Image 1 (cartoon, helix red, strand yellow):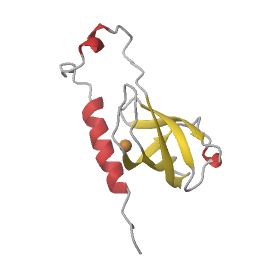
Image 2 (cartoon, protein in one colour):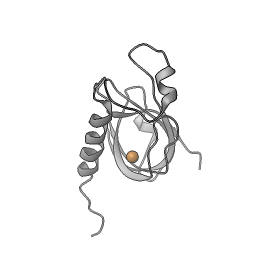
Image 3 (spheres, protein in one colour):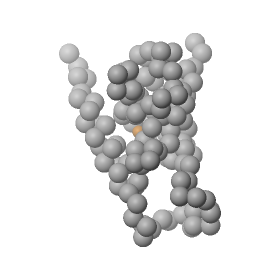
Image 4 (spheres, rainbow, N blue to C red):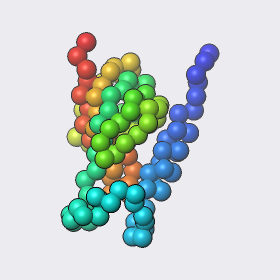
Length: 123
Ligand SMILES: [Cu+2]
């Protein structure tokens, strides 16, 4: 009986992180000066891409628990195991525990991470 970790904890941690970044504090400083020159409407589409292994699938809640490597792109993340919410467009039926995937994440309107696209790796 090992690694019976309550994975909801990592969800909470990541959600807190998301809320911190996603908060609409207009005065938030950024250390990336190039961002200020990007003129877009209020929604700046920020995504990140990574690879990982599916650890658990919650079809009802549409959540995926993934052990992922480094996520690259505007939305960077260090390697970790965490849960993501999954966009309605993603077909969860193609996934199973232990499946290697490539995925794209972004943030939803609330600033929370959400998986927008999943590509199962071919065996
Ligand atoms: Cu993560």
